[in-house]
Length: 166
Image (cartoon, rainbow, N blue to C red; front, side, top):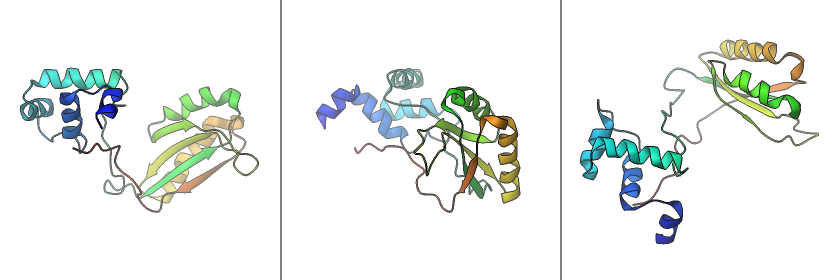
């Protein structure tokens, strides 16, 4: 375990900070100050350490992880698009900028059964809403997409990141 800590670039205080935040930030007006009180450091040092961990790649990001079902978005579809590799960067930037796309990324295709290269997750309160979003993406991509599918979610499999043990 010590070796893992050293290679991950975490000192003991960083590790304690990660343990304190891996269930989420405190739902307080000043969450970094609350974390600092728990750790015996200032809220400013908490922010500085988190920024350093992000810069170093030990933490990817600090973000909300919404439960779409609880927010009323019960129709969630992973849209997959067959976009040629030479157009994937532009297409991905355009699709990823749409306000209803929560995440968008490039994956290698596996032809002939799976020709899709661009993935974009959309969320709606109804299937019609999702289908309208898919139509918007299809219109945006135009001939840059040779085909697509929508894979609707049927249940939540995971809603957490990596967890360190104490």
